Each structure stands twice: as C-alpha cells, then as structure tokens.
Length: 333
Image (cartoon, rainbow, N blue to C red; front, side, top):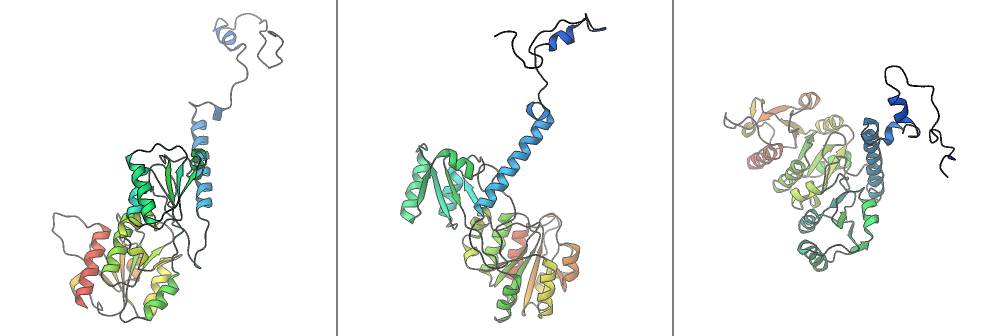
C-alpha cells in the first residue's frame, strides 16, 4: 500500500525548506529513489567493468581446470599459452566454432571429445562436420547449448566444439637420454617462441630434416595448442617435444653431454653454412620472434650463427629461419 513501505527513502518526508544554492531541487530529486546502488552494480562505473572482467577470468580458469583433466607423463603439463583456437577467449584445450572445428578435424588434430549442441542449425558447414565425423569415426556427443556454453566459458561456439587431450610433453632428461642413444643427434631448442604457428612450423621442419626432438620452456612460450598442431601438419605426433622448467639449465645438461650449442642470431658472426660441429651432436637454439635470443641463452651457446639475407629485409620469421638452418645443417651432414 502506498506510503507503508519500510524501505529507507521510499516515503516522502517533509523537508525544512529549500537548501541554499539549489532551490531544494537536488534533495527533492533524490526523495523516494532509495539507497545509492553499489559501484559494481552500476553498469557505467569502472568498478562494474572490473568485476565483469574478474568474473570472466575466474570462469575461464575454471573451464581450463575442467578441461585439463587426464593422464600425462611425469613432467608433462597442458599447453600454457592462452591463444584462441576459435571464436571466443577459451583455453588451448578447446576448438570452438564451425570453421575452426572442421579445419581441426581435417588437419588430424587429436580429439578428446567432440560436442554438438541440441537443436543446432544445420547449415552447410555443420553438415560437413557431421559427414566428416561419421566417415572418420569421430563420435559427436549431443548436449544442451547451456551446458556447452558453460564448458567453453561462454565462447561463441556456434553449437559445436572440440576438447583436445592434454599434450604429453617429454621431460628434458628423457629427451637427452634418447638423443644420446642415437648417432649425431640434432635437437631444436626454442628460447621463448610465443607464436604457436611458429612452434608448429618448427616442429614440422625438425621432423623433415632429421631432428630427433624439440625443447621448449614452460613459461613465456607457445605450447602445443590446436594452432600449433595444425601448422605442424601431424609432425607433432612423430617427434618428441620436451618442456623444461628451466631452459638454460636444460641447455647446460646438453652441453655437458657433449652437444654443440648453436644459437640463431641475426648478428651472429658465423655463417650457418660454416657452422663448426654441424656433423656431430648439436642443439640449434632459436630465439623469440621479436627480441631474438635472451642474454642467458646467447651466453650458453658455443656459436652464434646467422643466415645471409638481402639488406632490404630486416629479419626472418622464427619458423622460416629455423627451417633454413635445419636444411643447411642436414646438407652438411
């Protein structure tokens, strides 16, 4: 009933007259409005935007924890970078969206579970996905759209998503032991290469030119996401990839075991075609896309080698440079 509300501010009270300087407009305008909402409840306030971002971050982390379940070898961890594998900001263990899902299937990327939302509109692309799945023996689990939203942390999945298995990284010591069991092995070490496509391209080149493994650091480095898998064209299933908690310590272990460490560097004084020790056990160290080799990695290397290029070109993409260097090393053998 009007006038009986106990809510503070709901009842119009008689004032003591106009407030000085405002004619009473401010006080009268606030009468009956109720208490001022909290800052995080006001959509235009920066506190609200911060709360939304924080909630999305927690939701994404929860989805990553759910998706990372599964066995792996000692020393292995799921991919650490958070690059997108489809529409929406989800972790590397998910591929979402009709185009990315179809491309992932066609590229032969390992699939843990495939999902399709109930009632998803059957356009041409979804029909292609269903046909490819049937022909390839891929089981598509049908779940509600709400459940798929929850599992993919609200990504724009278009009614279809793939959950990838956790990648089984080798321990650096296991990679070293395997390398010591072969004649004149080549190992490629990546010093903070952050683009998963570059990682995939380097893995592909390593497999093509006889390297027996790839070594990457756990932090500040791309991991084997869907993008890396796709770029590797399946080579990631044929060549071991090790992940080191401390890359420089792992490089020291290879050096102590008799490997020559050669760092690719645009300013390197040694031409890759004249690399000493190219025919023996070798670790080729490739730096990041933007800054090249870190100081500690440079100091760990026995030689800094460069690839001669035209003066008009400032540098080469990390994946391209690694491929050229591996070709030249294999040619010298």
